[in-house]
Image (cartoon, rainbow, N blue to C red; front, top):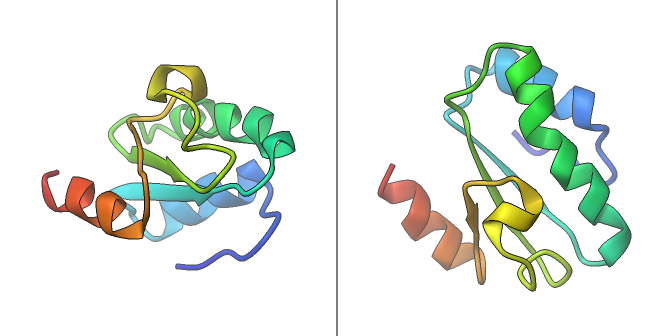
Length: 88
């Protein structure tokens, strides 16, 4: 499900719950998105979605480690992210 640009974190978590997602992927091109990405895991946990994988990518995010963003994986590109998901 593509939630488009500038999707609020709560809407992302709600869609993950509604769609019974196994993973949530977020992309960010500019650094102001970093604080929003750091909120994704907490928003998922608040809905009992602890098992949903969080994958980040994009120019601003791939410069950081997963621990810096509180995500499971930071993909170098879309193909890298797809390979990670195949391994879940």
